[in-house]
Amino acid sequence: MQAAHVRTLPFPSITGALRAVEALLLARGQRTARRNAWNSVLEDRRRAKDRVEAQRVMEAVAGPASRAT
Image (cartoon, rainbow, N blue to C red; front, side, top):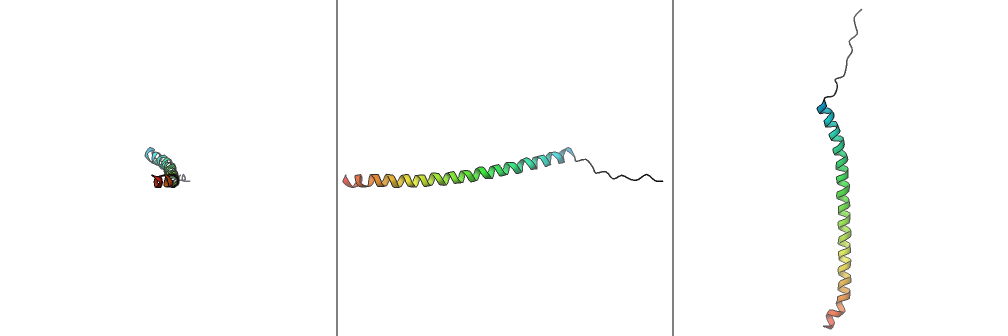
């Protein structure tokens, strides 16, 4: 009777394991970076809207006073 051949899978190399961990961490980091970038865009839009509103208020307040002088 012959001994059965057992096929074993090779252990992943250290480099392969590190690459897998790196890919996992970078994927999470990219999601965080995208979320931070989008939040920055929304904040910039809010500030721009506030600037326009403040400019309108300043023009409305300064309007009659500028005409009087």
